[in-house]
Image 1 (cartoon, rainbow, N blue to C red):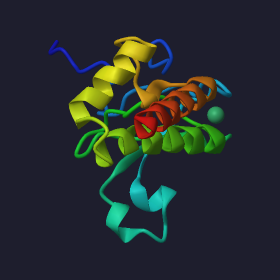
Image 2: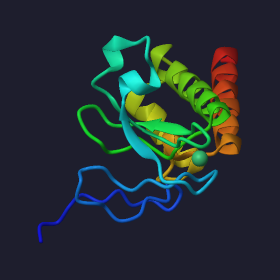
Image 3: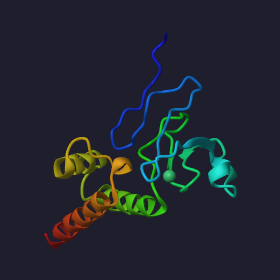
Image 4: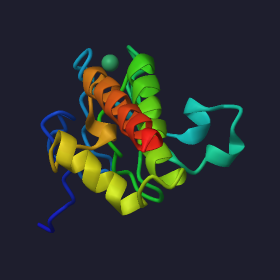
Length: 146
Ligand SMILES: [Zn+2]
C-alpha cells in the first residue's frame, strides 16, 4: 500500500485518509462527516472560486477551504462566527506587516512567541482569535506611541 497523505490535527478531528482522494473531516460542532465540495457549491455566485475545494458540514454549514490546488483543509471546520473571528484575527496580524510595523516573517514569529509555535489562525478557536486581535492591536498602539 502506498502511503496516502494524512492530515492529522487533534483540533480538526480528521480521521484516517480514505482512498477516494478526500480526507475524512469530522465536524467539531455536530460530529457529522464533512463533504468535499467545489467552490461553486459554497459560493454559487462566485464562478472564480469554482476550482477551489471546501469541506462543508451539511447539517450545520460549518466549512473550511483547502490549500490552493489541493484537497487538504487549511484548518479546522468553522462556523460562521468562527470564520468571522478568524478573518478579524488575520486582518489584525496582517496589519502589523502591511503597515510596516514589522516584516511578514516577524509578524508570524511574534504570533508564535505570543501564542506558541504551533499556533495557526486557521486552527484557532474564537477566544484565541479575539486574543490575537487584541494583542496585535495593542502592539500597534504601543508602536504608534514611540
Ligand atoms: Zn456540523
